[in-house]
Image 1 (cartoon, rainbow, N blue to C red):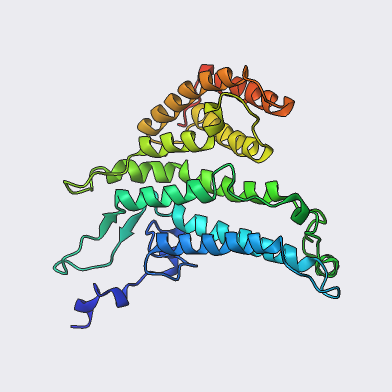
Image 2 (cartoon, one colour):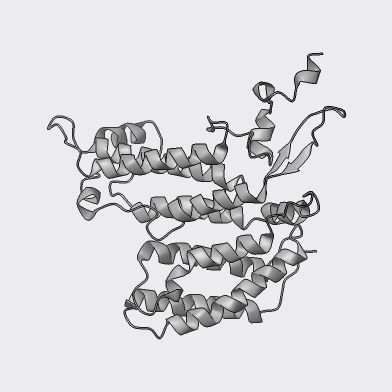
Length: 309
């Protein structure tokens, strides 16, 4: 009689393995809401508000500047955690421990609308050109806590760097997201989920995910003129490097459809990169970036494929 109540929302259950190694987007740590997408959206808004407030924050003379850096680091960490909640929705499959007769199937792919909503938030808040912006005046005030730095050295830990690198912190978050979204596991689940979706519902397809990544990460290529900011160049290079690696050295777990889609993305991206090199308003760094990425993709497309045995 007690076991028959397992489908009640209040009795939802997942193990540590489900949270750390599973694919269920509702079995997560740091998720304190009944809707992971809505909760992540709320936390992102709080983090962005926290960052904005630091620009006008009044500091007490005896307090020092380190409180600003701690607050910004907290907000960035919160954004990274929220990004992880959202990324888990893409290719996610709810895994239930129900026995037959309860009325629920044990494997339920996340609805396409929910996956698109999660991807929209990732694009707008973490992968966009203005994902995180800090005024120059605020960046000049983000001093390290020298006491904490000294304590870390004596404790044998890695101390925080004296300078503050927004580009480095942002790239760490974005690198983790791109790694997850372009992984073989996500590709496999999206391809497999097509056969699990019950009509008239439509699945969220792998081609849509890959197309959205290119659209969002390379949006500057559509402009008639203008530069490409340094943080965007870092993110674009990260994507290009992963794309090239998957074209040259596909893993044994990779799917043929995923490799075909990635090759198509590289083939369509190459002429756009070459055309963008000729436009006005590019800095020397951005022009060199476009030239280098073009050469990287061209070599990857022309090279002999090293298939895993």
